[in-house]
Image (cartoon, rainbow, N blue to C red):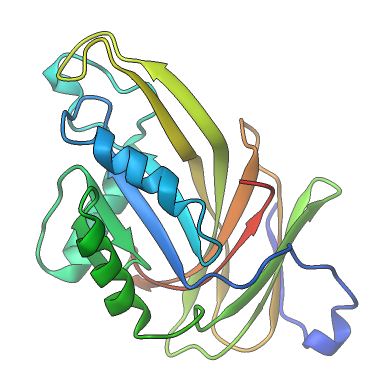
Length: 237
């Protein structure tokens, strides 16, 4: 059962954080094995994943499955997440390949210049996300410490991530292509709430495949995802 403990940071004790500086941006690529325009974006995401100031994630969607190939990594939850972003932006633009930066700015996922512009718009020139998140996994639990100011309540999310997946696509627009996907999200789980100030969130490590995890503090529009306020990764990916 998820446990959320709101405590002063002075009472949290000395807890080592994940190595690395706080990220400037979280980039989510919505892609599909059935999309002929997606391979360049998948390669661009792999390049972004090597940047120390970015958490770059692949979220395969399922709405192109009808074209003749069922995406082996896609999940309906990822399609719903992409549509939620589009609803929040007000443009209703849902397509592949699409990158969403910090939950607020979208662009074509293969356009390098557009991606850089989207990062600049989404970050507003900040060197890091405004909310500090420190996270680790131990004893069967993910433990996250959050600190910062909040204009409105936000959710705390745990994303299970696999470092790489290779897929040979048998049908559809990419038939015969051997594709490699990097930092593939396998599950998105809401593990707590945050309304500002110092807090600790603890949750059991989810079952299922994962090479690591990402903890997101993300504001909401109703039940739909909105701006990503803070993030931390757990693991080497």
